[in-house]
Image (cartoon, rainbow, N blue to C red; front, top):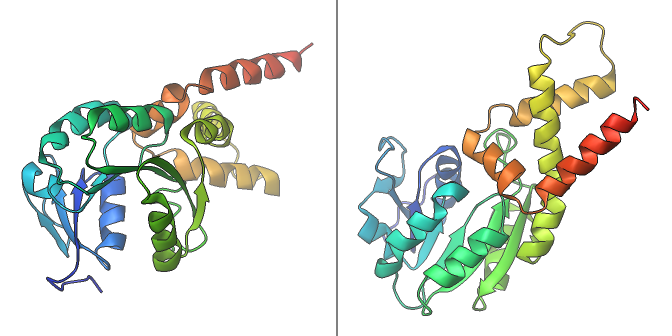
Amino acid sequence: MPHTSTDAPALGLIGFGAFGRLAARQLRRHFRVLAYDPAAAADEAGVAFVGLTEAASCPVVVLAVPVCRLAETVAAVAPHLRPGALVLDVGSVKEEPARLMREGLPDHVEIVATHPLFGPQSARDGLAGLKIAVCPVRGRSARRVAAFLRRAFGLDVIVTTPEDHDRDAALAQGLTHLIAGLVVRMEPLPSRITTRSFDLLMEAVGMVRHDAPEVFEAIVRANPYAAEMRRRFAALAGAVDG
């Protein structure tokens, strides 16, 4: 059930797209969620829609916006953040968001960059056992965040650096989305004469094929190590034909 107590700590959620809604459904059990998104309809039970100033004034602020919109969002929330507040993002890459938050947010706030390694599709049966990367950026809140995520949701928390995250994600996510995008372009695909490995491949494609274009853009293009991954993949694929 949603956490309705007015004594619950307030959490400002900036952005209410597909992942913002998923975050709200999970976090409202532990926080009084105050969401801001001028493009979203206020139809989520247990979530109060407020103005930017009120959402950004909460003790915890989550920036649930596409990576391509993070710079403008950081600039918008910065004047309203209270001293001691904790600010987190949920972007699919980490080096650039960490830099934007470190340089654009006031020195009196703590910053933790996160990347939930799942989306609404893979989280439909719950969060337990799913992975999330946590990158300390400023302050000492990262350990507290990691402990909360493990305790409250059963997440597998990976504490890492933004650089190490992006290097691994260039393959783990970038390659998956690249292959999925190519497979979709090859449709129609066989549905009767298939192997188990092909079925698993199609299951993986189905998990990412409906991701928002901004997610694909961040994973495949915004990651600073993704271009080299694509070059290696293309070279190895081309070598198959001799």
